[in-house]
Amino acid sequence: MIWLIILIFIVGYLAITLEHSIHINKAASALVAGVLCWTVWILTVPEHETALHDLETHLGEISGILFFLLGAMVIVELIDAHDGFDLITERIRTTDKRRLLWLICWITFFLSAVLDNLTTTIVMVSLLRKLIDDREDRLLFAGMVVVAANAGGAWSPLGDVTTTMLWIGGQISALNIVKMLLLPSIVCLIVPLALLSLRLKGKIGTPVAPERILPATRTSDKNLVFGFGIGALLFVPVFKTVTHLPPFMGMLLCVGILWMVTEMLHSGKDEAEKGVLSVNHALRKIDTPSILFFLGILVAISALQSAGVLTIVAEWLDRTVGNITAIGIIIGFLSAIVDNVPLVAAAQGMYSLEQYPTDHYFWEFLAYCAGTGGSALIIGSAAGVAAMGMEKIDFFWYLRRIMGWAVLGYLAGAGAYVLQHAVFH
Image 1 (cartoon, rainbow, N blue to C red):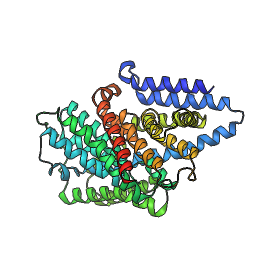
Image 2: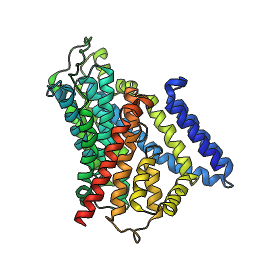
Image 3: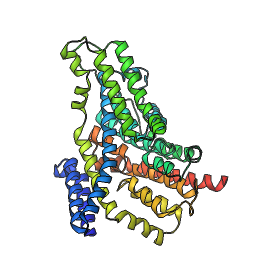
């Protein structure tokens, strides 16, 4: 029956990648695959209660990610509705493709370390819509934003969920992971960025601002909502660190506060103008199919985890490969196919702190590989899935235009870490 679960997952995965060929939305394929995987699993196990308990546990973790994604999208939509991103776009004056690509990627890289790769991608893809008119150019920049967000998230304990897991689990310490992974992460970004920028020529065309039906947002309102919104996103990791509550709780708190602020801010306006500047309108504008796609793919992967497939893979790697550097690189590539969270969780369960103590080479290298390897495929990371949903990026387009650069950067960064470790240890 485990093979049937694997087969369903593979068929669902293929349906997602062939979305534009079979004309079936990827969210539908992901939801069907996720439910069928769990259906087969619950009919297989002798104790149904055990499977249901596993499902409820996984659903708790998945819902946290979905509520986090929902909250981040609402905040970004509110900032956009109030023309808040104009405060950034007005300061970006260059139209040269190369200079703009470097600027966008470095902003993404460092912002991802402070926020996280998912939130940063949502913010930066929204920003690109204000800066770049041509769709092909915008998709190319969005693809590199995914690479930059994952690279930036890997070296910070708050930047990627797997790095956070290893930090909370005691496998790595915060200051040491910054010190050891900053250089490899920079190499991971700078290699594809340099190679791709050699091929870029010309200037980008900026979008023509749509004709406003309602009066322009007042500067004071724009500044207030932008300040509250960005401040809220920066507050989430602080809230998590102080309270130890999951990140989605901080995000929901921020959405609630921003909702109150905007309601009071626009209380004296007529309903037509107030409507488009409200959280109600932002909730209608967010991309719900992308959230459902996220739900389906994570439910399917959780079935693989409960069935023990990922643990079997991890144990097989340990037996057949043996070399921890090679295992780390393979886990990175596997994280582009299945979610990096269960892969890292499986590794945490397999290797004890007695075998590999805190800040051991293996844990540091695993944090880098699991955080950046997912850039190889558009659905290999939370950042990629978010960008895919927001800009409707085709799986095979990313495969042709971004994957090669992402893989080169991933391997270059891995080499940089190994060399760095050999020199300084």
